[in-house]
Amino acid sequence: MSFRPLKFKTIPADKLADRSSRFRRQLSTRRSVRHFSKKSVPLGVIKDIVMTAASAPSGANQQPWSFVIIGDQKIKRQIRVAAEKEEQSFYQNRAPDDWLERLAPLGTDWRKPFLEDAPFLIAVFKQIYGIESNLRIKHYYVEESVGIAVGFLLTAIHQTGLVSLTHTPSPMGFLSQILNRPANERAFLLIPVGYPKEKTTVPTITKKTFEEISDVL
Ligand code: IYR
Image 1 (cartoon, rainbow, N blue to C red):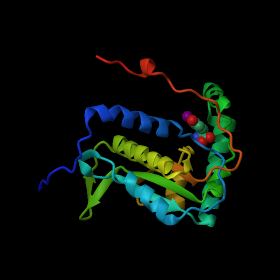
Image 2 (image 1 turned 90 degrees about the vertical axis):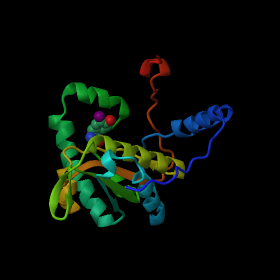
Image 3 (image 1 turned 135 degrees about the vertical axis):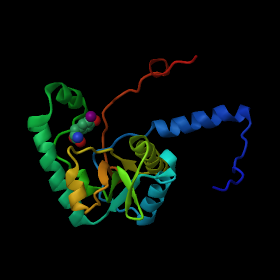
C-alpha cells in the first residue's frame, strides 16, 4: 500500500462553530417523505448521489454494497405490487399490536404508491461476502459499512434538494428476484427519491435533546 499526503484545509477553531451550526440547521430540515411528485429528476444527479454514498468509509475498504437505480416504470410497478403484498400481510397479520401502535401516529399503511410515483428508487444491497478470483472472501462490518453509506446517501439527497424515504418492506427477498441480484447480496433498504408531492404534510415529531442522547465526560 502506498501513502500520499492528506488533502486537508485547516479551518481555524473560531470558525468551526458557525460551520457546525449551519450544517446542523441544513440537515435538521430533512424529513422522511411518503408522498412523491411524478416530476422527473436527471439520472446524472442520482448517479452523483450514489457516488457520494459510495465514498463512505467501510470495513477494510471492502465497500460491501451495491446500489440499483430504478427509473423504469414497469420495474417500479413490479416492486410496488410485490412490496404491497408483503406489507398487507405485515399490517393485517404479522405485525404485533405494540408495533402497530408505534406506527399509528406516522399514518403508514400497506399502500405504497410512492414506489411508482417517485422518479427513481434506489435499492441498496449489502454484500454478505465478496467474490475475488471466483472465491468467497469474508466481508467485515457489513451492517455498519452499509449503514454509514446510506447515511451519506440520505445526506446527499437532502443537500441536493430532493426528498427520500428509508422504506423497509419486510421481508425484502422479492427485490433480489425482481432485480436479479447475485447470491452474495441481500436487500438492505429501498429508497424512493424525488420531489415531494405538492401540499405534502409530514407528522409533527420531535428529536431527542442533546442531554437525552449523549453524555460528555
Ligand atoms: N415496513 C413497514 C412498516 C414500518 C416500520 C417502521 I419501524 C417504520 O418506521 C415505518 C413503517 C412500512 O414501510 O410501512
